[in-house]
Amino acid sequence: MRLPLLGVLALLLAAPGPSAAAAFSLDTQRHGEAIEIVAVADIRAEPGQAWKVLTAYDRYAEFIPDLATSRVLRREGGVVVLELAGATRVLWWREPLSVRLAVTETPPWRVRSKLLSGTLQAMEGEYELAAAPGGVRLTYTGRIVPDSRQRGLLDRFFVRLNVARQFGALVTEIARSAGAGEP
Image 1: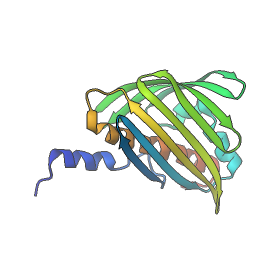
Image 2: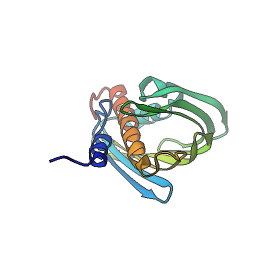
Image 3: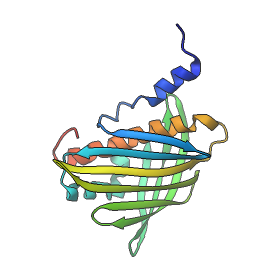
């Protein structure tokens, strides 16, 4: 029995990438042009260690897949202006991604970001840390409006795959830095 091409593509895109070794839940929903994301992971790490990795923006390119540049441009009070550049990737296809974000930190539990400029139409997100048995729970909620006139309905799959790889890498780095190995 042959699966339709779109069905095979959906299966490939829904599968986590090799760098997403961390266990977490991920849900994406499309609402109009926007893709809403919720990702949750329980990590064996102290809250302070998780916060340290979460806010180490200049190091993101070291452990987040397909991120070539991550740098703090300036800090103004409680707001960090952050520049990220790299690509979104699915199989052999790559698309450049560049964003400038306003990041607001509420230590030691919350990091909010909002798109200032870049290759997306809109983006906002929030990481929240909460105490959990044996460590912390990291929750990401976000909303992305891709600038992708070519892909249309496939945007949700592209976003899901890339968020899975990147969130998984962040969770893995928090666990690794805490000496816990896998989350």
